[in-house]
Length: 204
Image (cartoon, rainbow, N blue to C red; front, side):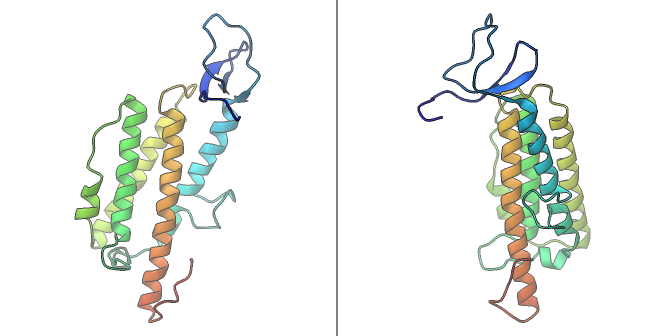
């Protein structure tokens, strides 16, 4: 790929099958030649969708240990644990969950409208700290609803040719995986501290 300054783009082959092509520029509309560097679209989207499902719902052995998806991790977290910061100036698990939920809502709109809105990314970090039991359950419920909403839309994409279709799905995967790691590390630290063994927190 060295020296190719083009970008991946979706086109249809002569068989009318969507493919992901690479090259310095898209083919002309009247071109009937199949480009030499192509990847079938489903070879990108199917593992991407499976990785998204693993990150949120159920582990499939792609990259997570068993029972460590976001939903599975949060199922065991109490409101008290979700309300504790592991050090001054750091976000609580409750704040991270609200941030992930907000990111899903924003990316849903980006993919659907093909527009990037101006949003205040700092608001949640500045306002969400502690939660009671009802607030925590509602926060987890909203997260799952936002996740289902964005996945319903992604699963209905036809040829993934929208400007932010593939990039948006990959961004959701990477962003959620990042915060899943942060949540699990924070939870390990909180539980270690509550058990009276500071400095000995381990990955869950």
